[in-house]
Amino acid sequence: MKRCIRTQAAPAAIGPYSQGMLTGNMLFVSGQLPIDPATGEMLPADTAAQTRQILKNLGAILGAAGFALSDVVKTTVFLKDLQDFTAMNEVYREFFPSDSPARSTVQVARLPKDSIVEIEAVAVKG
Image 1 (cartoon, rainbow, N blue to C red):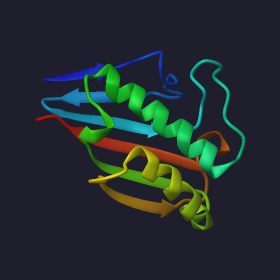
Image 2 (cartoon, rainbow, N blue to C red; image 1 turned 90 degrees about the vertical axis):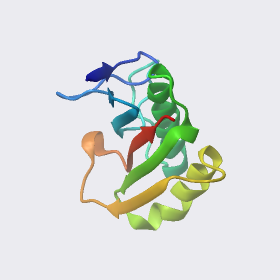
Image 3 (cartoon, rainbow, N blue to C red; image 1 turned 30 degrees about the horizontal axis):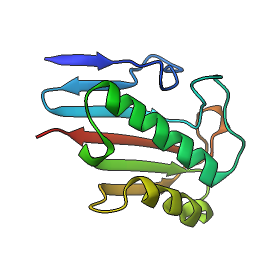
Image 4 (cartoon, rainbow, N blue to C red; image 1 turned 45 degrees about the vertical axis):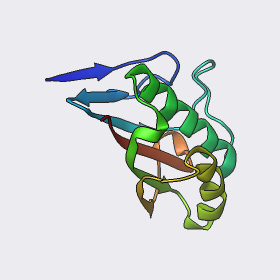
């Protein structure tokens, strides 16, 4: 059985996808962009600020499903430029200070809304 996760504490989907999808004890969170859910506006092109907002959005979706950042087992980080890896990593470490999830980080040609970072996650409970 699967259940769609929606919360106003994170930006609404900008296309035909769910913020998150819960199935059993697993939550799949769609790629998050640096959009302020209160205003619907994208943050400026600053890697640290965008990463921080994305991880806050991710946390809000996790929370709406009864999960926490500590339940995340895998993330995928999409960067417009791998030169931004260090700046992204410094903020990422604030949200995952120990027992960090498995992660892939890839450079992509372009992201939705011309974001410079996007992050998706998989979380498991129990």
